Image (cartoon, rainbow, N blue to C red):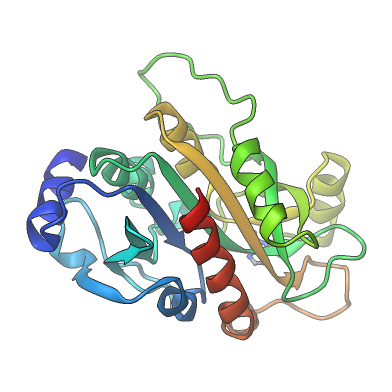
Length: 259
Ligand code: 6GU
């Protein structure tokens, strides 16, 4: 599963030799793509080596090439999740392809459950650090990689300049596809998590290992189990994404411009 083949296909299809920055859009973030910039070329995942069409509802499945303020931007709508059972290499193929396509930074977005008192649905939160609770590593067989400051302080500072109201939090990445039990949510809070989700952590590690600067942004789409007395559902997650898409899109556009 060569990311170099995928990158070559992207260069060929887009006519862009090297891209500068990649954005991975999580569940329900599709409407944000149009706000980031006007699509020049769109390629379905199915037409790119190593990419598979995501299974879950609302998870897109295309790569767009755009030009934003002179920068060549790859926007990936949809991602492969570890819970799909296709293995870690498929999950991180997106960021490895982006690295092979020349990007220096990757902006990872996701839908997350909020654990911290005071977080509300529809709130974007900068990822300051993560807990990889998947019991997997995308770089097994490779060398040790330092994860201090995995989530670029430089890009977080730029994001806070753009929107000073942005809070930061620690993202716990679990396998899923089930949501957590209330007891697990209490455990995660004890462990220092502010956000919980089913993506991002493996991609962030693979991106760092590939020498790419990482930025992470969660959209709180629901409060975690046991916090509201209501059950969780995937539709609610997608709806919160749709409602916040314009705000998220303009933040990402500005970040791409200044990154
Ligand atoms: Cl509450 N848990 C997990 N694992 N993923 C989520 C979520 C919760 N809310 C959105 N995505």
